[in-house]
Amino acid sequence: MNKKIKIFFLSIITTLLSSSFSAAYAQQKDKNKDKVKAVVVKEDKVKTKVAVLSKKDSLKTKEIEEITEIADSVKTEVNLKFKFYKKNAHASYYAQKFNGRRTASGTRFDNTKYTAAHKKLPFGTKVRVTNEVNGKSVIVEITDRGPFSKVREIDLTKKAFMELANNKNSGAVIVKLEVEAN
Image (cartoon, rainbow, N blue to C red; front, side, top):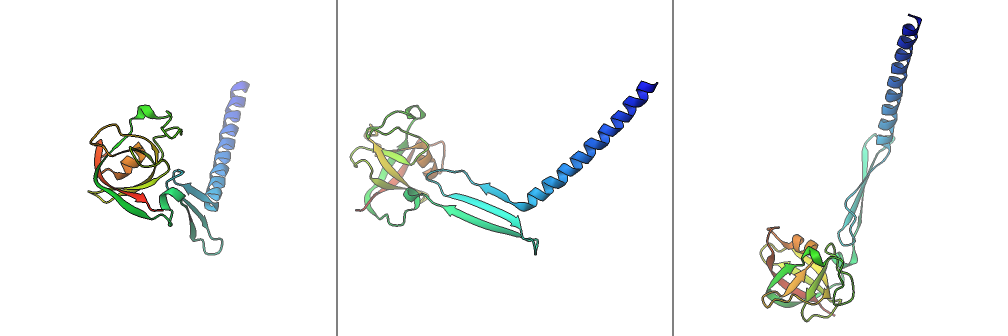
């Protein structure tokens, strides 16, 4: 009987301690929540990165939001000027099997970057590719030769193509090409 009483009291003590610890943990968590929250949208080299920091002002208890934008030079460079190159060009995208292989320029192909293949344009040329149906455009850099089809004019990485396309299941889009003017 003595053992049963000891076990009973020990269980009550552990229950009380665990509940007090969980209450203290919840209070500490609420304090930390008020201090600083940081949300970082996907970090990509080409996409714009946005970080939102919010914290409560100690006097007014209002949330203060601070937005920081960091833009990549290829995507949003102000000094780039483009001249018309071709209209009604057919654009397609690379298959996934080419990921990691060497391109004609010697760099490794990465389907998550903004690069493209063209038959004649010099390597390193920046090209603005605009979907003629919806007006969306991306800026890509020529790093490879191709496409090896008579009807296709330019091969884009999958990431660049998906930014242009209305229908994500399509394999080709009619585009306008503009080349960086020197």
